[in-house]
Length: 147
Image (tube, rainbow, N blue to C red):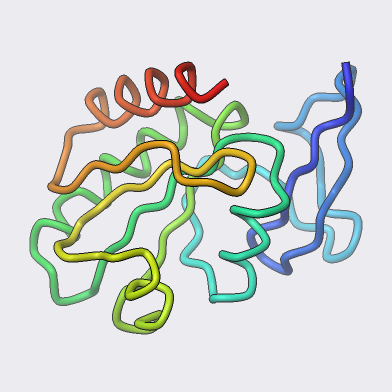
């Protein structure tokens, strides 16, 4: 079994985690922050690109905006899903107002939209607000199909 590559959501550094080591307890070798906090981090463009291209675990992205009511309603559910899915799946947030170029490249037409990436490619997409249990079930099914 090979090492996992986990991208730090805070500084964007790629960390190598041996299979025998708990990813939940791991800290970033560069900034020292925990690699998994069960809290989705709103990432800047450079960290987003590293997350989807360099992480060996699936990355679930919540594309949202601060003015979006359904996005704000889904935020606690996405937080709860992170508590259940990490470290098997990384959960991050992408503010479509601040990252308009990436949102355009992703073809975002409505928000909230969740996109699951694995090994640098999009493997599933779901638009509309969902409850935590629905997010977890959808993400696990999509990740299993992509594996």
